[in-house]
Length: 174
Image 1: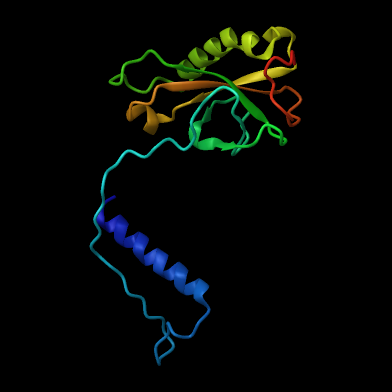
Image 2 (image 1 turned 45 degrees about the horizontal axis):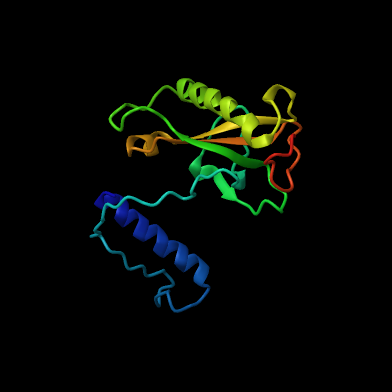
């Protein structure tokens, strides 16, 4: 984070806190707000852990729900499979591109992931894809994650009528 941006964040955070405080202790005798800011900020660079560990059997909703486009890991909100949910991961895999490879065109990444998901569908669900009441959507790294070396893909299934799933889809023949 650059210093100017860090200072702006501190100022905005201070103003937000002031607006929410509701107290009179933050105003001067003239009635104007007094805000203390810090103009120097330090930042550390560290690799954040993935928000969600991708694994077969993970039930989730995606924010925002996405039909016809890939989902990213950051879109996933895990849910207990016993609760209503819209997606379940049925496979994970690693894209064969090297860590140095540039981010592929979105349609190429989506196509590769979709093809791989089709190959893995029947063994998890217990029904051939063409006869299933489920559709698939890949979970892919976004450009930021790809540039950081993330090549993990996952395959999610959802009902074609977009109704919530309850329970796991594993070996259900849906």
